[in-house]
Amino acid sequence: MILELAAFSIHSGQNSAFEEEIQRGLQTVISNAHGFEGFKVNRCIENPQRYVLQIFWTTLEDHTVGFRQSPAFAEWRSIVGPFFASAPVVEHFELVSKSN
Amino acid sequence: MILELAAFSIHSGQNSAFEEEIQRGLQTVISNAHGFEGFKVNRCIENPQRYVLQIFWTTLEDHTVGFRQSPAFAEWRSIVGPFFASAPVVEHFELVSKSN
Image 1 (tube, rainbow over the protein chains, first blue to last red):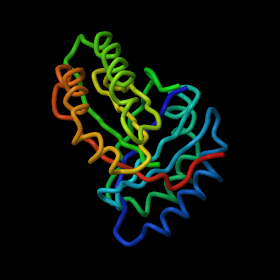
Image 2: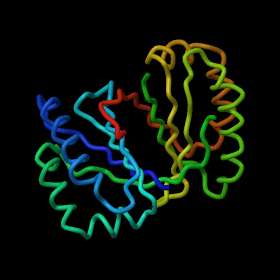
Image 3: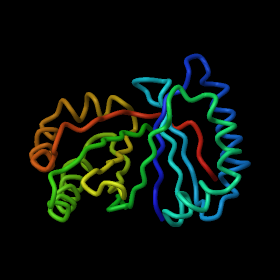
């Protein structure tokens, strides 16, 4: 399993609408993608317009190829894209260790 | 519960030593801090010198006041600090939503 971290800021004053819409996008689009294993949406305490979205995928290619090269990617971006104040910064991670 | 995200890069060629030492620091120092609830160490696939450390705390102040203003903070930094190629970027997050 790999972790996608997508960091971005949204336009001011849109937190409630954004949080409803990203939830809808995650449940109706992302959750149906091949290799999807889970998500968390996190809002930054120091800067409430900033979010970090975590998505767990079975493999890197499930995200970078399977999802991004499918029609679902455009559908997802049509839901969340209008809120973005700039392009999201997306990175992928392997788990090195964790607490018990 | 809040999430601390600490993003940083380490000097090249030190991944194995760093991963052993951060594990030791987390187990012997961070895990004993008041309000500590768990950790994950993640290594970036696109840039293997880059890591994101997640630490879960009961409250923001458990990290920013209780931990950072205790002697344990210097002890922790003495373990992991020598590996850092630059100062870590630290932010705190509230969970908005997650998958079932």
